Image 1 (tube, rainbow, N blue to C red):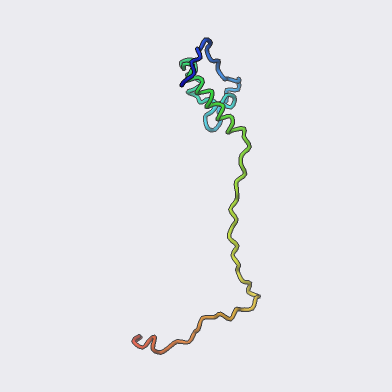
Image 2 (cartoon, rainbow, N blue to C red):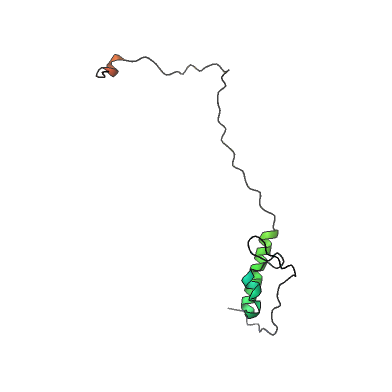
Length: 105
């Protein structure tokens, strides 16, 4: 159920007198978009309240400390050194004659 409160007074503009847009197009003072700023007088009170709630959310996102990005640990590749002794698990190089019996050059 919606609030049944009567609107006796018009909702004032949230303008803070900064009037400078950021890179996303929001005012750096009140966090309204250009359309929200220029169309403020044409909005009814419920639309103005919605704009103010959006502005508060935008301000909260802007001023909240950013979460540190969790860096993924790079997989550790265990590369043997050239100075380490070679392991004894070598591939057998013996070739059976039966394997290439049907092979001709």
